[in-house]
Amino acid sequence: MGYVEKNLITDEKVVYKTTYHWIIFLSLRSIFSLFIIPMIERATDEFAVTNKRIIIKTGLISRKIVEMNISKIETVNVRQSVIGRLFGYGALEFTGTGGTKETFVNISHPTEFKKRVQEIQH
Image 1 (cartoon, rainbow, N blue to C red):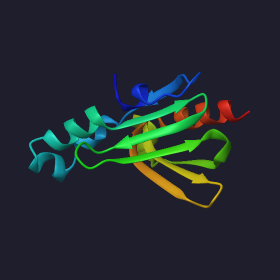
Image 2: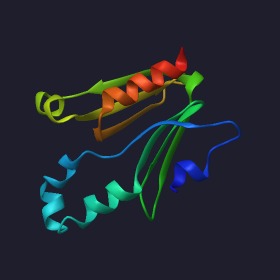
Image 3: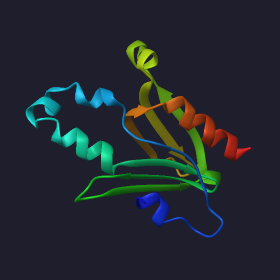
């Protein structure tokens, strides 16, 4: 049970959950850290859509937690390169009603994440 499941509110259910794509292992940072850093990130960072909000938690020691109510999300953008489309990864960019933007890269199945947010919004 991760951060998301421990912090659900009354009548809230996880609709979709994803993590980083395996592509994060193909970088100099990964090689220099003997693949430890991407393994930790992939195991600890969480990206979830619930029936009430999106919850994103990154970091193990110092954390960044983004929670947005579904009703407060204006747009969810997906950016994918050709390689990203072929292998199923990309960047997610969330824009809230106050103009706040949050971007997360190398996310596995970003179009599915966006689709689930849109299904909950309507």
